[in-house]
Length: 207
Image (tube, rainbow, N blue to C red; front, side, top):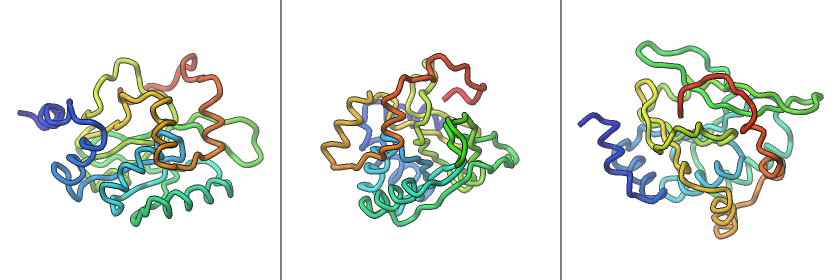
């Protein structure tokens, strides 16, 4: 059985934590990386990741300007979750490895001195290159409606959307239960009207 179908078969009935545990400690032990932001779904994912293995590589994808409150909240999350292997990417990793495809996260970006936000594609090719399993968890824009699976294959790596089945109400409830501090800048963005529903975004891998 091809790898994608095999992993889907094992994980299709698992809850989110058990799916992540299987991927991180069994199927792709030592070969899993997480891309993250400070959006609420990302924080929920990081909490689960840290409970399974806080040494899992976590890369905060942060194009645009870095604001003091962003650094403060990142530090708070890293310390509260006990993350021991984290770094930051500016999303400019555009070189595609031979035999692979380009890997990216779609994100809303703010720049100091500019009003509003811009939509950008953050390239994470260097981040993903050493790994076989990529937990894609920046959660800045909604996944395409036709994407039904939590587990997919992008180029040579498995790309995982752990919260594909979750609603925002469930995400906020999880945060309250586990005392996960919300990042106010991201939380306010989540409360505004979801512009993604009416915005024609650049084509990207269907995940």
